[in-house]
Length: 132
Image 1 (spheres, helix red, strand yellow):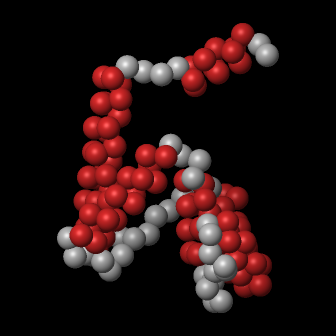
Image 2: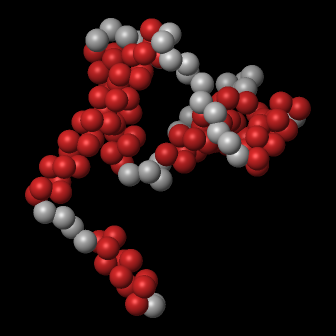
């Protein structure tokens, strides 16, 4: 291991103080609030549910999946299984593949990100907005 590797490992395992922890909690609440606000706006129709990415490889794959439904289904099924389902819907769309891949990728994000999404969805369900 190099000195740089050791320094990086130290930084990753270093713990903060109580103030750092409180700051993180505030950020989490703010993230939950922002996600909930956006989910409400999407539910009302004020914001679109769509997102876009600027990536040549992903765009090429997405277009290829339009032309190759058997590959689209195979990939969607594998990703759905990774997420804990038995399979994707039998008529998996390109959006299923992309949604599943993005959700799997978000598993690598800090835990609080997925927790914030779940908490925001729970808030909306509690308020009666359940059409998401």
